[in-house]
Amino acid sequence: MSFQKIRTSFFWLSFVTIICRVAGLLREVITAKFFGTTGIYDAFLIAFMIPNFFRGLLAEGALSTAFIPVVSELIAKGEKKEEILRITGAVFTFFLISTSTLYVFILCVCWILQKFFSLPAKIADIVFLLKFTFPYLIFVSLSAWAMGVLNARHRFVLPGLNPIVLDFWWIFSLFFFTGFFGNTLEQKIFGLLIGVLIGGASQFIFQLPLVFSSHGPIVFNVDWKHPAILKMIKLFAPVVIGMSVGPINLLVDYSFARSLAEGTVSALWYATRIYQLPLGVFSISLATVLLPHLSGQVATEKIEQFKENIHKGLEHIIFFLVPSTIGMIIFRKELIELLFKRGMFSEYSVEITAYPLMLFSIGLVFYGLAIIITRAFYAYNDTSTPVKVGLISIATNALLDMILMRFMGHGGIALSTSFVGFENFFLLYWFFKKKFGILEKKRLAKSFFRILLLGFCWGIMVQLIKTLMLSYGALITVISGTLSGVLLYTAIAAIFRFPEIQETKVLRWKI
Image (cartoon, rainbow, N blue to C red; front, side):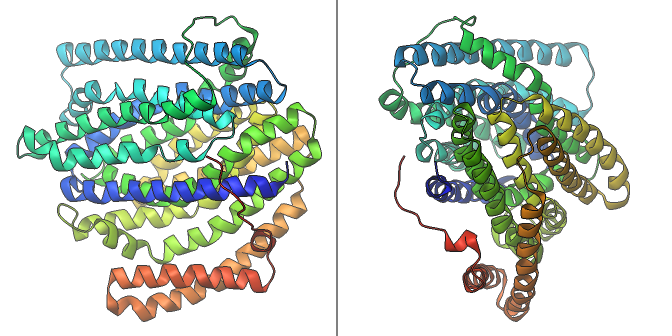
């Protein structure tokens, strides 16, 4: 398949992702008004991250490394529908049983900790809230299964809209549920917990009609000895640790931040939400679209198509994320002020959130590139190499956190994250080139420096626009800077005939 068709799906999924990320930002804007950068919200975020850790490990990890490539290969080879339903049904049954069992185990652990141990207040709050956040794992894992089934059949738009469902119930709960539990923040947090659980269940239900129409019914079974299931297990087993790298790094970061001043966990969370916006819109969207195509091309030995598509993918990521990085650094304070400064979110909150945003942004391009290369490994059914890289990053991140936070506070945690992003990309690139010999160093280096030069010149112009607009306030500054910046970047790229602009043609929409 030509990259033009992949690009078409990518642009539509990016458009959908933009809608979802804007909805996610709106969710954070409203949450900031209700909870700001407070201790109870710090505790909630960590309690919410723990089920997300297992989601990444059991659901999204298994899907991206094993489920989607194997199912895509079966579809590409014309396997019978009934057989595919048996395989996907076995995976569904496994997710349902394993996540429910894990929740029961977590309940027992929380009860033991509360009953027999005297926990510090900061830890006790997390343990208490975890009992209510953990059921989210069950629902979101089933939702991830539905997304994987649809992605394997090249259905990306509807699954891409799925995060909006959670955002809706999250926001709804802030306005309509929190008031039922009392007036203090510690009481209002229960309303948010209810919204999260309803949102998780709704994310799964939202995708079911398309799953039934394009894939078929859910076939409950425990045939986990099926050859395709065994292949998935073989692929997924070595990546259990690897897929936990990101969540472990986040938990380490937030645990260190929890030992600093109150509100630093929330500040890192809000900054992360902004810096991950372009990462989700461009890198994750493109990687989602690329994976089933790359898996099919490897399975059918269309290596030249694979080579061209992976290079095009990396070049597009550089093209989109370089200006995103520069823009977020230039407008960091104005962005935070415009989005969050209201209610419980004070001027102090703006300062402690803008600081890590700048430092997070430095590693944005490298994280984006690493996501694409990781999917290329998965297409080759190589899940062990990303694991090795991930293990190195855990050690690096923890070491740098301890060193840098002494001198830079929670900003050191953000800078550590950026350095780990560069390290991940460099190691993944080196291992992939060594094992498969497909990546062309000169082509990628030429693309990177060409776009970096464009971004540098563009950044100077955007900084001038910001200087002229600052006296009109954050709203005018951000809007005028964003619109004029996008137009300038597109115009310059078109004038100098950058292929990322010249080759763009969005032809049709396929949900």
